[in-house]
Length: 70
Image (tube, rainbow, N blue to C red; front, side):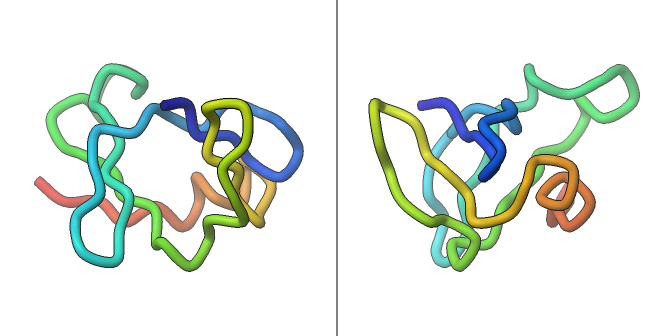
């Protein structure tokens, strides 16, 4: 399922839900970031529509507050 910011810009693709976080697939990241997963806090999820997870923050803000975990 695609994850998009409040502005409609692609943020990532859901791998799975882990606790209070949405784990994103590694395939969406730039070189140098594909060795670990990024997570979005579930509190940023505004809703699900048309098979997309829409965040309450614009994409650039959401990406800046990713939780990274190796």
